[in-house]
Amino acid sequence: MTSRVSARLPDFPWDKLTSYAARARSHPDGIVDLSIGTPVDPTPEVVQKALAAAADNPGYPTTIGLEATRQAAIDWLGRRFGVTGLGLDGVLPVIGSKELIGSMAVHLGIGAGDLVVYPQLAYPTYEVGATLAGARAVATDSLTSLGPEVPRLLWLNSPSNPTGRVLPVEHLRKVVDWCRDRGTLLVSDECYLECAWDTTPVSVLHPDVCGDSHEGILAVHSLSKRSNLAGYRCAFVAGDPAVVGELLAVRKNLGLQMPGPQQRAMVAALDDDAHVVEQHARYAARRAKLREALMGAGFRIDHSEASLYLWSTRDEDCWETVATLAGQGILVAPGEFYGPAGRRHVRIAFTATDERIDAAVARLAAAS
Image 1 (cartoon, one colour):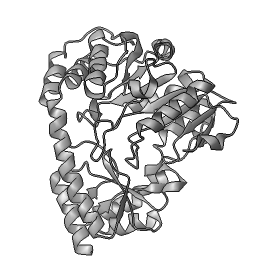
Image 2: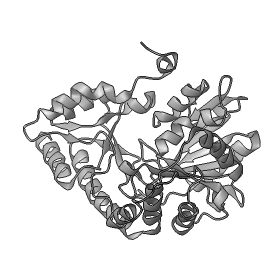
Image 3: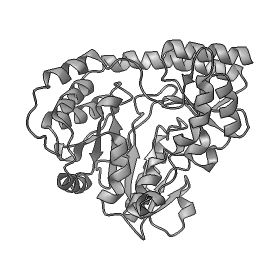
Image 4: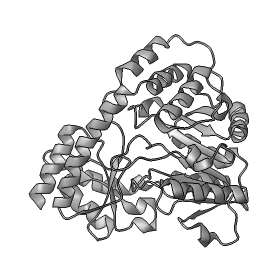
């Protein structure tokens, strides 16, 4: 039986990859799965130790989270990205950024008759969240295309998933001003902020972007990519304390609480920069090898100056590219998953092990 809610949702995109995955797995040397950006390297020892030390945790956590966890997030944003003016009431730990993104519209009372805007090429969960809330969702990078319509919520994603594109300070500032002039809540998904290669991303909370106030602005951050913590589900949202307070009030009633041991692990991860530098170097080496191999195989790499993906094209339908690579035992994500504008691209992750990246490089070279 299909519920009315599930019937409204778009199909889960990765279900469409099943046959291509089977074909890639049939390769004599096994599959090289570059279709998703899941970490494969060890969780940093400093984080594992913090989790173990907090294992005796019999009581319920609070929804607002530990003061130490929120302060670690504030300190990290200031140290790494020059964000100032955040207080403890402007930070909320959450159980993974995808849960937050998917539920935000509902939790903020956005619904029928409201408009949610998200990037033209985007992570599908922005649309899913709007759909669950019963709001209308529009994918566009041009705010002028909206005419007189005023969104209740506007999503930014810089660095972008899937393209790796980074929005410059000037563009971010214009979007902030546009939203403030209209009373639109601006939420910036910044989960790849530390995964940059050819540029330096800026948070929407930086004073060069938003001035001396975070009014009407939130930023979403995740430790999954920077710290290999996808399995821990550690993330947080920061910004306007009034909006954070609205989210907190709803989440208290729903019992959405980050477990205490994970919060202690989160503090350790945010306080330590050394493991981030080491992981960045691993990804940089994998990225360089895979990028060169793809270009040698006739691909063009667009954007991709940040994130953990290479936004690649051979100027053909994305499913044709997916099929060709699956025949070589390499599984990638079709650009169509991220919107119609991605139909001639594929998203190729470089989060596989060194051995699997080397296997992909060898197969691309052999087929060239």
